Image 1 (cartoon, rainbow, N blue to C red):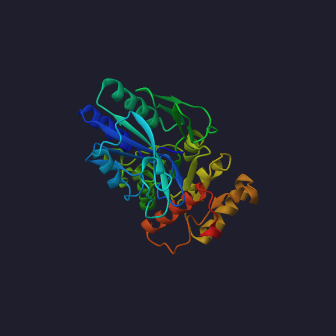
Image 2 (image 1 turned 120 degrees about the vertical axis):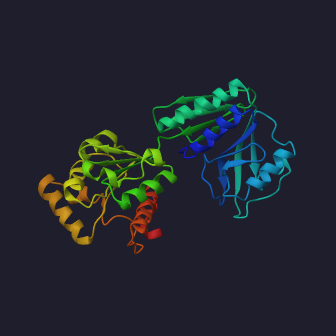
Image 3 (image 1 turned 60 degrees about the vertical axis):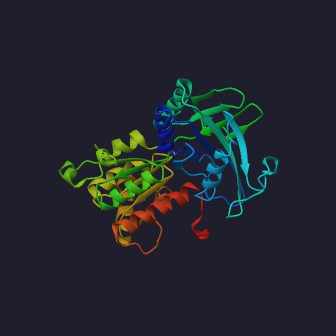
Length: 327
């Protein structure tokens, strides 16, 4: 699973530093229909709240249970729904599902602050890591891991182990309105977003900078950019609408394991691009079958924002291995 709620951990560190006790919930398992995936986290100090474990239908009930004194242990597992008869809470979510949660109670101590800081530091590297929470001790361990083969959740009588995968990335080639909208949506969806262009004369047109909550431009050749950052969890999008930029990226990307390759342009532009790549790079039809162009799902999008929505929807579809025929 991925950790996309880093803002929740940041808030946890801030509240602990301010002397507030906090409760942190992590989804371990869902039964039936449930609105949030395994690994989603929710944080509250008993009043304020950040994140979500149910899209809003469980959080109020959970805060009420805190006020009733239900969750005072350092760590415990709690199932909300019809699997929770042992807690005398025979309820289910409005959508019909139930959720199994890891509930951690942190009081403001130096040790607890360090636990959260260690977690945050590893999460911000965006690489794979493992977190183990012990039920009978006031400790938890967080450590890097080198592979993606570990199960998402391993639970026994002593602890819960949570395996977080490397974060998915969006590698965007070319500055433009569509690029800016995709970057915004990608960050909101939990992707690591990087943007590349080599046309420095366009630098004044990029306003979604890191200082403004966005990303700064990598001013380098697109082929070097892709070689540096593309991996099996990358979606690479050619968005410059300029063959001098897009083609440089396309000439390199098919040698990478990127899970999604897309290029913006009309049917005519796409046909011309395919011809160039066949002629110049000797790419086969099989290799070019990895290219999604025109980019995104066909929802009749015309405006830059609509194109961005259709593109992000298609990337998420592919990431979750959903066939277009099922849409």
